[in-house]
Image (cartoon, rainbow, N blue to C red; front, side):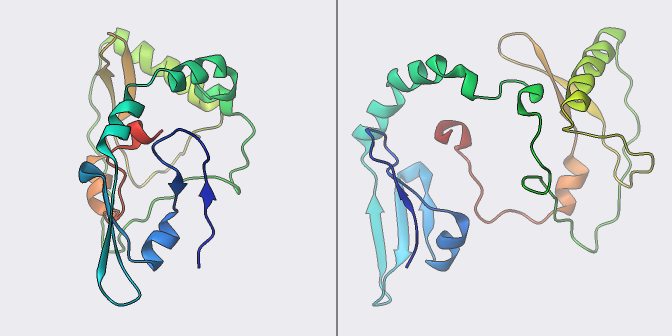
Length: 180
């Protein structure tokens, strides 16, 4: 038995299952092929196929975009919009393998323009309490500026060493942008 929410809407997704139930039911999701496979009570593998025409129609639909724009005040567009979230309620913690050794990347130099852009974005994150300063960190990663399609630069942290030390997620979300 599982509790789930049914969305009575014209959306493609009408059931959203969490990781716990996906693991308990031995569900395998193939987003590329719009397929869900699961082990049935009789031990056979069951398959649910998605409707490709419905997905294409949904992905090309403008009403969702219009609804997001009309209710833009409900979304957090910048870090300061999310002030006041209790970290006991919601925070992200990394699982690092016990045998992993901390890595401190060598500092990369940046131009004055890039340094100012990083400082601006860091100030925004500090004001929103998304990040905090640490005096003695065991993992040190460089900040890099990545050019977006619109020409603006977005700050990112070069976490490749830390990523190598974390176990891989068995249920990654390859299409998270499309799902959101």
